[in-house]
Length: 110
Length: 116
Image 1 (cartoon, each protein chain N blue to C red):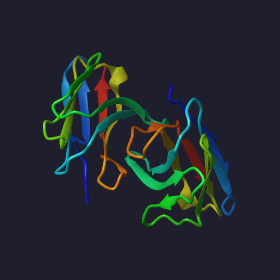
Image 2 (tube, chains in turn blue, cyan):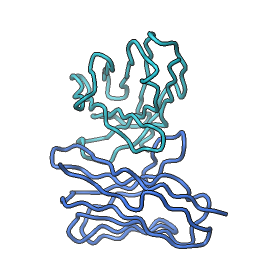
Image 3 (tube, rainbow over the protein chains, first blue to last red):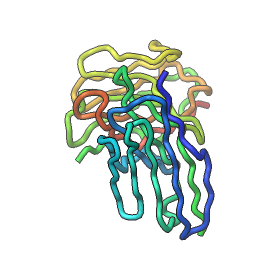
Image 4 (cartoon, one colour):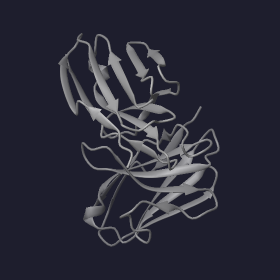
């Protein structure tokens, strides 16, 4: 069974600090997506990474796809309260299903 | 583009009634739509995958007679929770892809169901 392990599960930091969340697997994925979900809303796509070693930036968010396409990271610089939410990674499994990690719940304290 | 809507956003019903939730892709044709369930502070749990014009594929442990899925067009899928009970109370989210199932999914805003 292919799994995506996200860490940490919970993270609470002060505004202005930097942080990194991880999405790891023992399996290779053809692509990985990162989503952010706020309470009572559906997940919103942040980025899709496809190529091993790829780095994508979205303002203060930097996404990296591992060279072997088994893991990914999301780094946030100078976190702001608006970054608070549940961050989910998702990848296409061998049987064409999309599998989700359990998420990292991020809380930025003002 | 790639906007997905859900209706209703919230629904409260009595135990034993049936509830229909609609999922629409507003600006693209969705070859595949997915239905998820999410419990408080947990990740998404895939319930079923539906392709236009064919029967939905349900995940293990999801009762197909309980959760009826219809994907009648390339822009609309419906989930009907039949004879709802309090344990069916949850946040239901749909998503859609434009092409093959493993493409990026675009999510609806979710429907919160409360069964009294």
